[in-house]
Amino acid sequence: MDDAAHLALLAKPERTQERAIDRAAILVFVEKHRKTGLQWPKIDALLKGAGFSEQPSHQTLKRWFKLVENVDPINWAPALAPGYSTTGAPLADCQPDAWTDFENRVAASGNNGTGANFRALHKQTKAEAYKNGWAFPALPHRHASLGEDGRREAAHP
Image: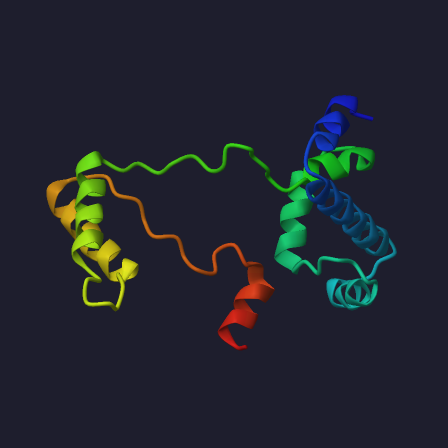
């Protein structure tokens, strides 16, 4: 057992710990059924009926199995802990001139009571940044963090 990995997992928030333990249990479940010779469609059906909090896709399971490749099963939970950072994601490159241009566009728009259309303003600033050779970050996609089921549900409510 890798004590350092388990201590690092215990230092993470409780929800992160729970997800890591659930993911490890899912992989143990899948691996147990793979060893009996079951194919993915049967395992998927059993997995859906097993009552796990997450219902990962086949691709997600492949990704998780890559994360735990050459790792002893007792250490799967720490290896599967979702990324967590107290500082957040690193900031994207953005030159001060580009940010000032964006702020000016926001300040100049929306004075008619309709509010600022941030997507349109971002697109205009992105074009200006490209023309001037400025670094300006891409606008995050609305559904990027939802996962496959969440994107499907958001698209078809």
